[in-house]
Length: 169
Image 1: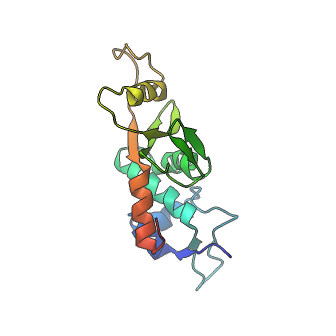
Image 2 (image 1 turned 90 degrees about the vertical axis):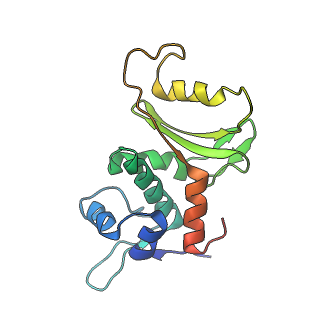
């Protein structure tokens, strides 16, 4: 069965982004459309059509943009979730899918991007260690360097986009 595609207006609404801004970014050449899954506008009266993965990527990039990350960088960071699967002590996840338990977070910093599975337990310092790795800083030294980091709840974004598009989350 072919993958469902969504017009720009519906995609923008589900991603929580202004359709004009999204259109502008596409026209500027930002890597928004996936050539294999999406349909580019081919002329007058032809609509751009977006896959779920692309809409998720746009939604993640928009959340990161609200946190100060340039949109183009946010799109690249979102690929870590959309295109790459992962595993944790509590389970695995398919590309473009959250972990089945706990929270699925995207941690982005100048040093890189990672998708992590968190389970909050009293006294658990796992997230602290992950943040230190993401920041590329020693865990006991926060006196020097650039320690900016952006964290978004991928599971929440995924649920919102899915519900907005009428797809079961």
